[in-house]
Image (cartoon, rainbow, N blue to C red):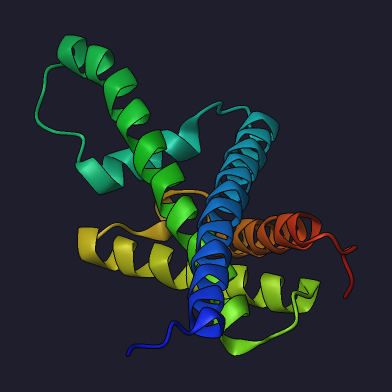
Length: 172
């Protein structure tokens, strides 16, 4: 006669619920961080009197500017920027899910320090590796300090949302 173990079933169900919550909260945290990065670089570009220069630089680095004529290039910039925006936000969704899972699996406190460090290190590493792969010089774009500052802000946004979603207030 087999015995039905309710505690194992309840544990598995609780684990699945926590995983779904991490996916949902992490994805939203990543979307908010991605949007914050876009707004910060828009502000950076507006202050420099070069609106959309950063996303144009990054999309050209990622997808190449191609060998199109100026007329064709003008029409493809919008599509390339739209595609870059999708890739950018999808990357941040994955980063947000990763951060939520990191907090859940390691037990690290959801502090601004941890989020800022995650954004600063992980986002900067991903950015640097993608620039190395494409052979793009960062000095042609917004610059190292702007990239690192915005990545730090992205981590702070992600952890702040995860703290709010968890139902606790944000702490250092």
